[in-house]
Image (cartoon, rainbow, N blue to C red; front, side):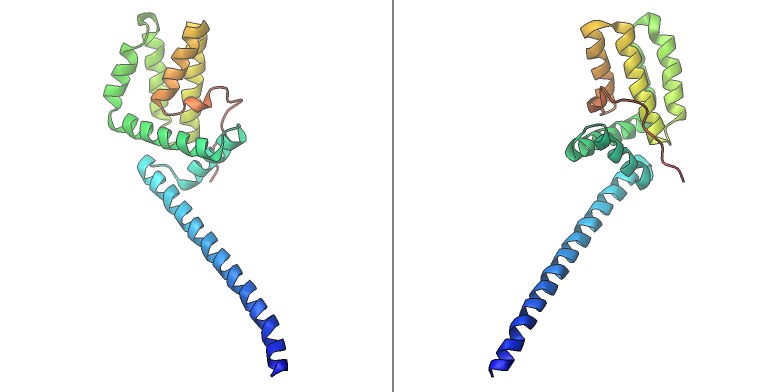
Length: 172
């Protein structure tokens, strides 16, 4: 009887370790499945591939955002892109009307370039950021900083102020 108890002790310990490992693996797989579901849903909303969205998120984090900030920025960005795709004429008209009359031709040209980049999320976002920087420079001072932030908010990416360099596109 004692040898049975002596054998059962380590066996129970091993089964406990296996149970914890199985539970952890299940939890990890569940988390991974939930994560993939969220990325897939975001991809459907934006029309972008999951790889591009994950690439953007990773780059946001490397630029100093927290994971939560990156997710918020991507969510805002995807909502703004959906609106831009859905209400393109209305959004363009709203942007042009809010632009200084002397800068409206410039803004139309910039919006035309944005339209050409709609299927490439990193390139589109790079252009949004670039236009924001130009707005800041053209307006100047505190008003320029506010105009840049307002522009970036329109696309849900005001957290990108101060990003260094261009976001890299995913390659197939």
